[in-house]
Length: 164
Image (cartoon, rainbow, N blue to C red):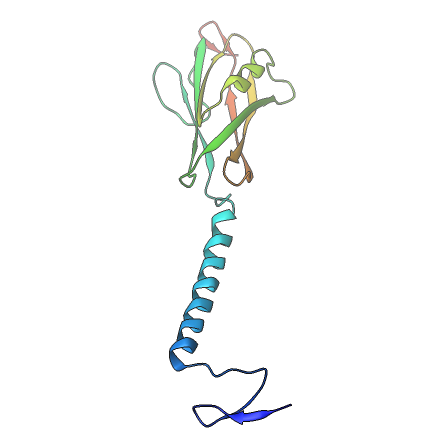
């Protein structure tokens, strides 16, 4: 191996070349830029915070908002469901309703017709209790990351002038 003294006076071998302070600084800058780019690229493909999303529910008999249940007798209840807390982005929504044991099952498949971040459904209070778990599978269209949110709606049966 041959050695010689470079312009700076340091001994160098044939396979080494002298790097100016400006070139060294540029290489450090390039490495720092690549590291930052790698971190940003990694964060861009991470799914939105799953814990941030939730499914809010409001039941309105006679126009009174009362959460996801009510004790107010009514022939008809409207359940309004909204997915909240999502990070900005583009999402698809797959809705479903699962009747709990002993609950009215008629109409639960209509929830699946919803395709946006909100859904509304009219429930009959005619002599049948309603206890359904409403579930939404949310898919981020950019990353294909999925998260699931759900809420239970409990509505009492109505028999004439009173709750059954």
